[in-house]
Length: 195
Image 1: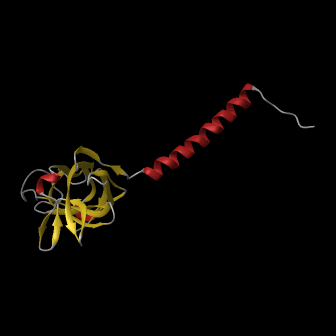
Image 2: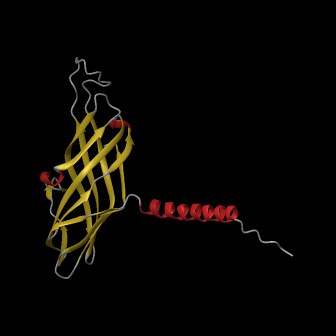
């Protein structure tokens, strides 16, 4: 004969056990979605997307923090005999870049560099491919921090040195409908690298 013990202390222990299990499952769900950024529609085919990124990059002096919103405007163009919707770009030497004003709201800092260095955007490059009512691209944001003066009392660890790095947003995707209107804009992978 098996004796069942169901005292208030045993009930509390079971509730705590179930709570821990539920929290573990919730933690896995949050981790699986980490890094996905969903764009926000500002107007027809005008979107903004967060550029939040924290990473460690030696060429930028260690940890970098990228913040802000990148604006992307889409337009209908004709390619290979069909109409597709792609980001508006500026072409130079066969490469595609977002217009300069697209990145006005984006910046980066390197807290490890004392005094703290603020990075400015040099350019935003993209490689895109389109399918049937969807597109994918890689966005590379190139950052540069101008050097501090060499003989200053700012306590700069690297006076006179220019620091650069790039933030890479992979798996950037968008979809559009029959009316050539972008309905989704998102990315699911980002990291920082040396140029």
